[in-house]
Image (cartoon, rainbow, N blue to C red; front, top):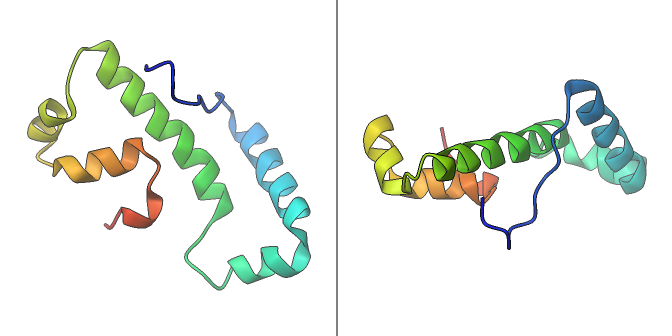
Length: 93
């Protein structure tokens, strides 16, 4: 994996839950409550960041380009790039 990119630490389910709770506490009840009105799920974001990082690391370990993986998965390259950049807002089902 490229060294200039910040690495999101490996977390298990319990740790992810703890991170989510601490983020909600830091935001306070008013802002945390507002988040439920938008398609923004803190739990999903915490878990997604780790999965995205693992996907990119595996691709790089195998010496494959985004183009290679996109071709194999039959997925547009821009979607894979968005995933690897944690651009959740750009990712559409």
